[in-house]
Length: 145
Image 1: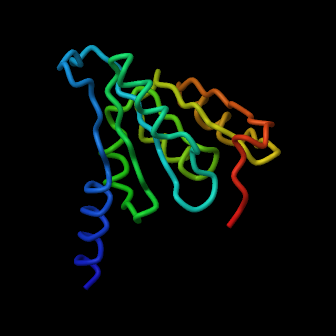
Image 2 (image 1 turned 90 degrees about the vertical axis):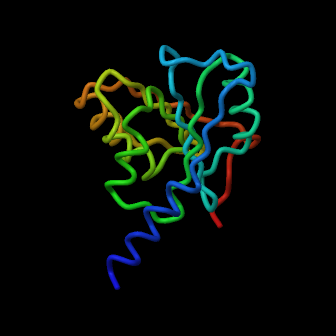
């Protein structure tokens, strides 16, 4: 029974992941893979679609991730292994970036009226660059549900 539930989690996580590339086929192995981690309850990226379109227009490969479906740790690690830059709202999803390679970057969008430095310490100690974008405008803040 437990294996069956684990298999469902693996496939739900993989099936919810979408890869976006430019239509003209100019994306290649030398281009950065940018992961956009979206949450759907609290702290989600309000303009995720615009963000993805802008990145694809610049010829980046975008991996659109949704871990709210209940990803297992091995699946999460597999999905993040080729991500060069992870963009996510501040929260537990940022912690998943520990599965990214050293010398990669994490961009945390903090729209909660406060900031916590905990993730900064973990990622910089692991050899990743960590940037915190603190949104102070009500235009980009999402209320708790």
